[in-house]
Length: 284
Image (tube, rainbow, N blue to C red; front, side, top):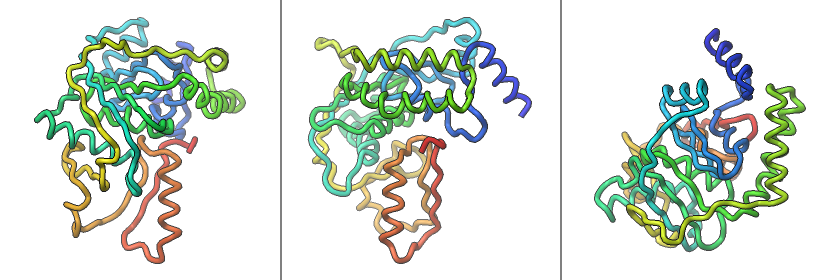
């Protein structure tokens, strides 16, 4: 507790904003607080925000950045994941998260994402921002250095207007420190909403690998099995496996997951296993 209090004091002295105990997982908050098209450096391996390019760093790199304002890293090659088509009934983005390494391993014979930047590109109906986050967040499970999702600037502006800006306004009203920092971020986000512009990929960009996924080819849910998130199997191969308990939570969960969880419970007369739900932040 003493170490946490000292760290909070250091963050505030440096002009940063510190969360309160019980607020939840920091990188789930960062999804809503970072400016689009910025570079984010985080000490958590899951620091993978959907609207910017975020590199997870070790504690030494983060400490260096906090103390000096500068840190160094080598920009690795990129792997492009092109997503087209539409989901079949009963299949979700969470299945896509698992299907990507499943297909890549069979296409290339190895984890091509390790140490690389994953660039996601979607053609067709856009994903919700929470689904975009699930894809960028899951790059940590692929051992990727970073991830980004090619987004429409107006889509990002609408998300800032509906979610991020009201959240910061609420933080200011609740008295989060440092108020000046929050006010500056609020001003920048409002300016972006008025004139939304995002960087775009170079049409001549060279990629180490390109993986094409048509959502229609995912005919059933895909599940990550012990003891690695890359050990993926289609649900049909797990028929008959015992289930000890269920857990809905983690930093990758969004409001839609809990809505689906509630819907299943209300439609089920009898729950056969113990079920837990743990929202990652009090925002949800």
